[in-house]
Structure formats: C-alpha cells, structure tokens
Image 1 (spheres, helix red, strand yellow):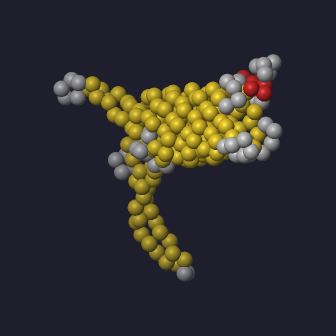
Image 2 (cartoon, rainbow, N blue to C red):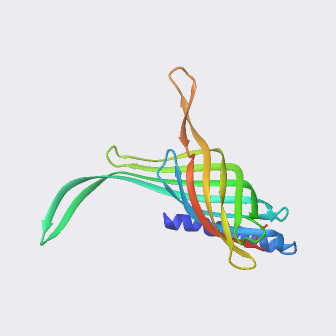
Image 3 (cartoon, rainbow, N blue to C red):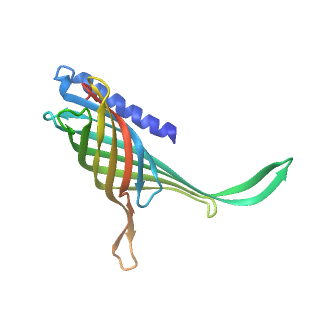
Length: 221
C-alpha cells in the first residue's frame, strides 16, 4: 500500500516539476507548490491516510488558484482466533483471516485559496481554501469465507473546505496545519431492479480530517 501511494505522489511531483520547467520564463515568484500529509475519516470507510500535492499561481497578495491531487488509503481486516497456546512462558494465538478489504481514494480538485497574516505585526498566517472536482474509489475485496475476490469502482463529484494556520520558515517556505471537511457521494451502476428500474450503489466520502505540510513559493504553474 505504501509503495502504491508513493508511486502516485512521485508521478504527480514529476508532472508538476515538468510543468514548472516549461513555464520557467514566467514570473516564478507568483507560483507555488504544496506537499501535505494527514488523514481523513469518511462516513462509509475507515480512516484513511492522506498524501497530497497542489500547485498553482497567485492572483494577488492573498488569493491563489490551483490544482490539488490527494491520494488516500485504508485497510479493513477481519480475523478470528482459532487457538491460544502457551509454550515456555510465551503465549501464542493462531488466527484465521476472513475478510481483507483495501480502499484507495483519489481526488483531483480545482481550488481557490486565501492566505493572510493574523494582524500586521504577526508572523502567523491564517489559511482557507475551497475546491471541487472528481473523486474516485477503488475497493479491493477479498472474502475468504465465501471465496469472493473483486474490485469495485465508484466515482463522482465532490467538494472540499479547509482552514488552518501557517508559519513562515524561510523567504519562500511556510509550514502549515489545516483542518479538512470533504463532501462527496460517489456511485456505481448496479443494473436494473425486478421492476426494470435502474439501480446504483452509493458510498459516502464525507468527513473531517487533518493535514500538515509545506508551501513553497516559486515552484508550480
């Protein structure tokens, strides 16, 4: 799972760096890139680890626009105890794996961000953003009891709000912590009911989360 998430983030970083290289002749001081990590607790899945990347440009001294990509993973396993034993003062427990579900979530959002000092003398910045776009779920399911193995895919549109604080660490860098609210109802077509009506299955990705990261000025779009 870590290898998959690292591969996705690596590809996104390469794409962003290529983009910034092609546009190097533009005003680089007005571009930015953010790297972030955290978690999200969606309504219909277990808590997901989050890795994200966003890049874009300044509109003015407080507003930014850009693209954000997030990759999240979670895992659910159900085991039962078969036997418990003790040998030489060491206890052993034998278990059997019944269910192993792995969920991967990816979102690609268009985003508008706001950033401003708390007051004229402060070195702390308040941050906020709003974005919307495509969100997707791949759910790999292994049911060893019923011998069922399948992957289900859900997709749909969603939106995300964030608010947080940032502290500059250099002339071009800022570390930050943001609270997140994500809202998305994703669906998958199921076919038709006994009455001949179309049916679909939904998964609710709405939930709160937290992330931390670094914002770098001079890299990006």
